[in-house]
Image (cartoon, rainbow, N blue to C red):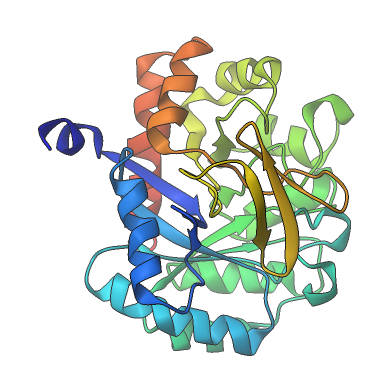
Length: 298
């Protein structure tokens, strides 16, 4: 118990579940099991992330999580979708993706009664910049990601008030894709924090080194964990998409795309040490930076 209390100090802004369950589960006991799993593996605070669904279904899932927010079991809710680019949908159902509107986003926030703390948006979508500005003005973290946008789209999003990049280098261009891309704009031309999934699969070791050199003080470790975190390899689902987990790596059955991770924050920090990141970078990425983001979004 003492070891657990010492280790449970990290902040995870992007986590979909664990212990065999998602935060969208209709059974509150299963939701609590997912929370407990991560809090037993290094996480002190987390945002419960929900994947793309129909708006009515999202509202139901948000309502189920409100008691966990009110009790302090979670630090809030992160909506990763449905306002994402089809070309970069990842493990989201492309048929449910759409452009945002302020009125619809406002309704989701109102349903959450203070619990919705972050929303990921592809900034090149129609109305996206206006919605990003709206979120920023209302103290909700406007994250940008799952974007097929370019260099200028990234800069416009940051100017509009975007506060975080959802899993940098995933669901967007990669650093190898050219000198003037969505990724290079965010890395080299802005001071925006960058989520990094430190599992050894989502971002190459070489890119981790570049990110750490250019923006080590802006890294934010996240798990992007799905239900299989803490569970054996096998068949799973994300929303209505089939996933297979092999050697701890989750991929869509349909096309082999990465589908979240089985990571914990303890393992993310351990992996960061293995690749040689400094203790100062690790402290900022696992505690200081995500805490600042949460404190700023109130």
